[in-house]
Image (cartoon, rainbow, N blue to C red; front, side, top):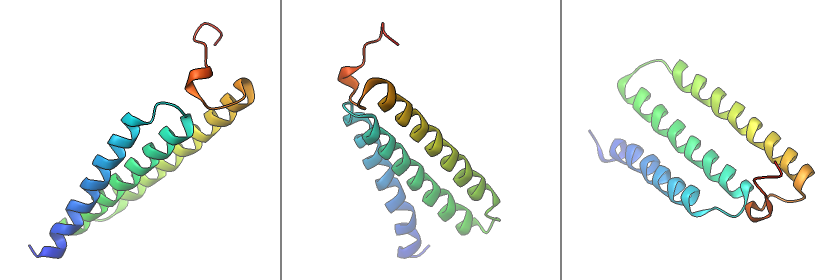
Length: 100
């Protein structure tokens, strides 16, 4: 195992941890939480691609994962548009639980 193959595994793990910290730390706006979720999905896609290419397996599973990540992103953006239309902003502080 060379140094470059080790870096291919360390960078996505670091990205994943940074995305988790961003997801936990961003509690004010829905858009920032959605962006951190997409960053986590991108890092996991990179990690899965690195692992599958290191093992020598076909990359069908990574394309399936990328498709699910794109569907998750589209669903999140649809929810964001719906929330902005009904409540006026994506600020979590302006939401009332009893009104929804």
